[in-house]
Image (cartoon, rainbow, N blue to C red; front, side, top):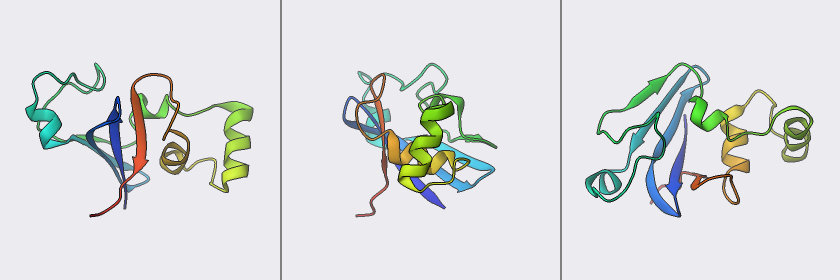
Length: 109
């Protein structure tokens, strides 16, 4: 199981967890959810306390990944399996993404 913290404009918004390669969970951080001035990270993830579950990496996050030759190059240079979308997301979406959302590996306190 791997987890990543999801940030919106450098503020912790939630957590994305890969249970295994066929099970993913996204849930908003309780402080982010409680602040009514904070928007949802995406139209596909309306702010709610429920967990979002999927059998594949959610399209919102998979769309943050490179494709084609760039994906192959990143996989090779980072030594990450090209099919490990979650690993690639954590390695490549930490800074300078298109949009306000970044992804950082979860660090336990």
